[in-house]
Each structure stands twice: as structure tokens, then as C-alpha cells.
Length: 523
Image (cartoon, rainbow, N blue to C red; front, side, top):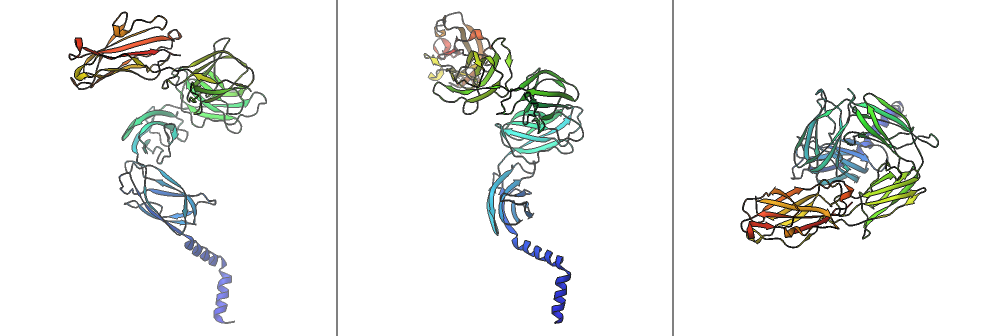
């Protein structure tokens, strides 16, 4: 055999693993794909130090990636192995370095050389603060969850650092911020939540977490003692009625649930899983001052009360609260989540019995509630409901013009004039700027109405109001007069009549006035 052939044979036989590794490395290099592009903020400025994550959506494990970050001008050229379809996540640095927000692009086909072009990251604002104990000690490891209009946001840099500080980029708007302490290792702290509206950089200051105590229980079926999986635990402050934030509050495969709560006295609710046919349960006045085990809670089988709530035109009404009470005693029955969905539908599970039902729409819609008495629910029952109209506050007649021939206008705000609407208000606009006004109103049974307040006849209530706006400017003045409606059934059907007079030297007799608002108080 030729010497060269012998040496080649020995090389192959003696170094098979080494040769295979070399071949694999060569194949890997050959299969590497290049992905490039540029990330910019809302102003078109490149965003530096953005981390790129690639996750396969076509099966297999995560890819091999190198150079997975942007340079000082937002450019990136990333090597990805192998080719395939990927989800790409862009994770900008935390404020103050950047207020750009997380972005994800799904199903990106990557092969050979792929240029994604210029990608604009969503613009946010800085939300900062610090989590501490009641002694002021920093709480590291607290995880932030944030909702915008009830939708969870995808966040980066959402865990407090060693000093308890957090800095996240969030969208502008009304936010719910939840502080999950279950991952804090140093001590047990109670979770917190807060609501805030942000329109620019916002510092929440110190979020103080009191000591936390483990609240736990088993939840099982009464019929056969089988574990109830997916039951939701809710904890309500018995004094304030506040629903506590309780992360990880669903029962597991053996029906066990535990969460962290502060010391206090609570209503503890066990909401049966949807479709289980089980009745939800509420425990009253549960005091927690140490780790508390509530034992095994048994949920009985029940019957379903369901239906659809619409207005007179057949339009489904969402967010209608359905309350259930025992007809014999008037005692409230806890039924778990009881609001209608976007299709106006509701579904509750109750024990067989006779109930009074109360359907209460949000105050923000011009509809009254409905009360049904002595409804027998002995088997599954469908109870559809039509809500009657409850106008916010129609007006009649004409007013008296003031400066510049402008007539003040009366309207209502805060929603429908319904029992219990604490936000109901009367409002005057287009009055003389910075002038003094008088709101005149009455609330009497509709069967015995007073003469129109436009006629100025007693008895009427009169209150002084101060209009805002630039002094002496025609139509620049406005004011709001709070008129909360008590939750008193005696007032249902009463007629509210109101109007405003505004001091204005240019008006006849020195007073301009609105027309008259007439509203019937509804259930």
C-alpha cells in the first residue's frame, strides 16, 4: 500500500470522533442563516442594546444564535442555525436607557440571508418605584404584572432588583399594576395591587408590603370527595370590600390551593370551575393572623340558571350584575362570577330553590335594572331579561340667553339616574365665564309633580355654584353639581326636575338660565 494511503487510513481509523466533529462543525457553519435589520423608536432613532430572542415555531429545539443584540445605532446582524420558522422577540433595555417596549413577530421564515428592514418598537413611558417591607427594607424579586383595559401586557425588566427598585416601559393609559411577592426568597410578604393612570414618566414611590401569611385549603366535590381542579380562590377584605390580589390562587390536580394574604378578616370565596355543575362557596369572617389552613371545602352539585339580557331593541347588554337572594329570607346567595358577557349571556349554578333575582346594568348605560321575585329554580332554568330604558336626563323648554346671545345648557353626567348611582351629577355649560350660578331642583313622586321649575314655583332646592372659565367671556363658564342618588327603593319612580340660573348682567333681569332637565329615577 502506498505510504500516503496508509497514513490516510490510520488517520481515519484512529480519529473517527474527531473527524465527525469536524464534519458536524463544517455542516453547522454551512447551515447558519443571517438575519439583519434595524430597530428604531417612535422618533426613528436607533435603539441600542436590544436583546433578540429566537424561538422555533416549526418544531425542534431552540436555535443556535450569535450576535443577538443591536449596536449603538439599532442595527443587528444575527447568525441563526438552522433555517426554519421562528418567533422573534425584541427586548429593549429598561428605563432610563430606553422607553421602547417589548415587540414580538411571529412566523418569520429564516433561510440563507433575511433582512427584516426597519422595525419600529412600540413607544412607552417610564414607570418606576420601589418595593419595601413595612420596616422599609428593600424587597428584591417582586414580579410586576400590568394590565391595560383588562389585557395583560408583555413586559421586560419587570422584577425588582436587589434594592427593591423597578423600572419598566409601559403604554399610556389606565393601568392595573400587580406586585407578585411569591418569588421573594428572603421573607413572606403580602402581594399588592394598585390602579394608576399614566400620561408620562410616573414614579409610584414606595410600595409597602406587609407581612404575608399562607392561606390554604383543599376543595373537593361533596358527592364523591373527588378533587376539584381549577377552582378559583378569591379573598375580600370584610371591612372595605376590596378584592385582594392573590396570585397562584387556583386549585391543583389534588384540589389544593394556597396563596399569600396580609393579616386581617376576610370573606374567602371558592369559585367552582365553569361547566363543573358545582355551586360556589363563600366563607364569612375568616381571620388570618398566622398561616391558616381552612381544611377541606366541599362543593355540592347544583342546577344552572342562565339566560341573555338585552334592551328593548334586542341588543345584548354586557356587564349586567346578576344578584341572587333566597325568597324566603332575603339572604344574599354567593354564586361566583355573575356578570353578563359580551353577548349578554350569564350562567350561574345554584342549589334548587326559590329565589329573588336582581339584574343591575352598569350606570354608564341608559337602562334600568330588573327585579324578579319568587323565581323557582328546581332544574336547569333559562331566564331571559329585557332591560327598560332609563334616559340620562332629557331636557324640555328653552332657556334665557345671556352675554353674546349665548344660552346656558343643562345636562347630566355620571350615567343613568338610578338608585345607588353615587356619581350622578347635574352640569351647566355655556354660561358666562367665572360667574355665579344657582342650581334649582326638586325630587318628587311622578304622580304628584310640582309645577315646572321654569315657572319658579316653590318648594324647590337651591344651591350656589361657581362657574369656571375666563371671567366675562360669553359661553366660557361651566360647573358640575354632584347629586348622588341614594339606594332607597322609595325613590324609584320619583321625578327629578332641575335647571341652572347664571348671574349675567346682559340677560333680562340679570340672570340667564338653562332649559329644564327632567329625569325619572330608575331601579
